[in-house]
Image (tube, rainbow, N blue to C red; front, top):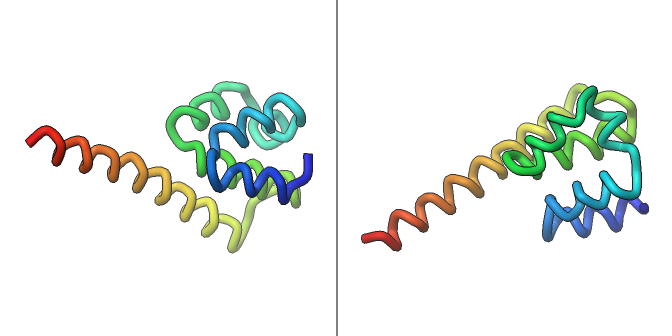
Length: 93
């Protein structure tokens, strides 16, 4: 699967992109040592899991500025969860 197509799908739905990676490639198994980390990443930190996997497949390791991208994806994941909780609390009042 083309990397550009996967990035476009990942922009709209990172979980769908991870699912497609798991079905059509072995990139997740190469980036992570066990199946548990990508599974947890699918449910808890999909952006972080997707960015780490894509960076790993391009150079077989993540270092330097690439960690900044992984950290930005982590902050995006945390922001999505935090934003959803804030909306839920405002709706309860």
